[in-house]
Figure 1: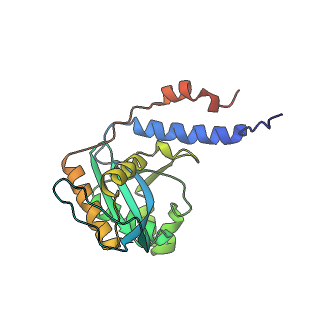
Figure 2: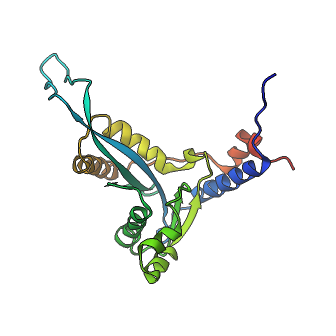
Figure 3: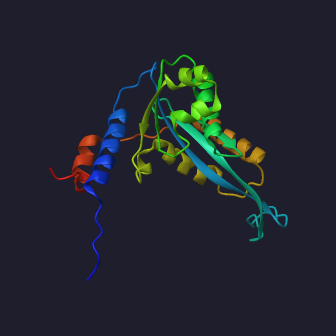
Length: 224
C-alpha cells in the first residue's frame, strides 16, 4: 500500500496567503512614486578552458575541449521593474546579509532616489530581511532604508511567482551559455545584456491573476 503524503492545511494557507499577496501586488497600476521591483539572486560557477578553443572557421563551428578548470563561484543580484522594462544586474563575490543590504541601499539611493517607497517582491531567503540592514549600517541609515521598503515575500516553493526569476532565466539562456572565467568578465557580460534589454524595453507581461489562481490551484486552498 502506497504511503499518502499530505501537506498540512496550515502550510497550504501560508502558501495561498503569500501567493495572493504577490498577485494582488502585480495587479496594481503603475505608480512612479511607489515602483514595483522584483529581486532575485543566482549563483554562478566560474570556469576557464584548460586548452585554448579552436576559433571558428568557414564551414566549421567553434570547438572547445570538454575539460575545464574551476575558478570559484560568485552570485548575481538582479533587480527588475517589469512595468518599466528596466533591470539591473550586479556580480558579487558573496551573498551575505551585508551584500544584500548594500544592494538594497544602491537600489534606493542610486536607482530610485526620488521614490517615496518601493514595493519589493522577493523570496524569504535568510539574508533578505530588514535585520540585514541593521547588521550592516548604523541604526539611522538602516531605519531610513527600511522605511522606504514595502516587502512582499513569495511563498516557500513558490519562486515561480517572482518575475525576477524569469529575468534570470532569460539572462542565463542569452548571456551565460558559455564559460566565463572571472567575476570581471561576468560583470561585463551581464552589463552588456542588461543595457541592450533596457534599451529594447523588454519586460515580462504577467497574466496570472488571483481569480485564476483560485480556479487552477483550488487544491491548495484549505477546506472551510
